[in-house]
Amino acid sequence: MFKFDTMRFIKVVNYPYYFWHRYILNPDFFRGAEVVKTFNYSRAIMQFCYAMAKKDLLSDCPIDQNSVVLDIGGHTGEWAEKIVNKYDPFMHIFEPLPPSFEKLEKKFQHKEKVHMYSFGVADQNRTATLSMYGKGSSIYSDCPSYSINPNTIDVSLKDIYEIVESHKFNFVDLIKINIEGGGISADRKNSGFKYY
Image (tube, rainbow, N blue to C red; front, side, top):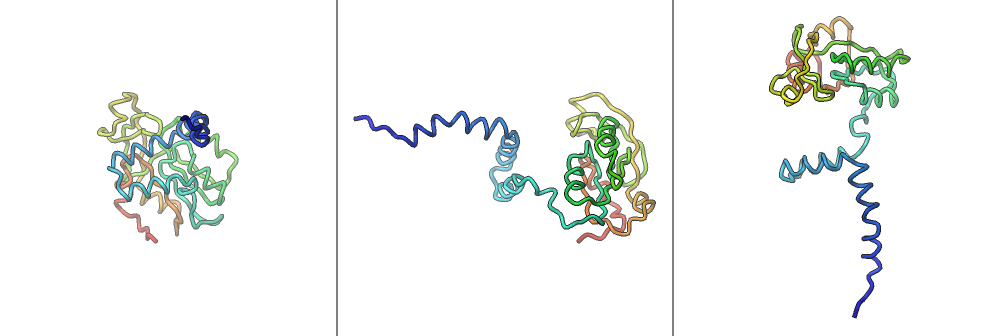
């Protein structure tokens, strides 16, 4: 005898809607799933992916309108825009890639407390060759963007210690570093920063 299962019927009928919203409208799900698989479903990675699902994880900070924030590797200012809109701090964005810097200028042209610099940050003053690959742009030849995209440009990098000295930063409340593998290099001198 056939028994009609109402709940199963509802799930089957609604599955396309569920699939569309879960997987198509949320591309981060696939990236998160790949990360979890890559690290063999470790507990720490699962907790990280759960935390990343919270939309305000990277913008939930103990700062205010008097804070000084550095965005090193600002790209087109997605993170900086969230921070500026939420807290209105004194924001300093460093971005050496010209197309990204132009977008930054347009985005923050009417924000007096946002200062943008068209150079990168490193452990010493120098010129470097940058592979132009959007968010994956890098000065490191072992970075995948070098083999994917042969377009390169020479960019200026400034010593983080000199930047801190020239701007007379007495205290920096928040620093975001996203310089495609150069985070350790930029922080090597430690610039007299105290971490809390």
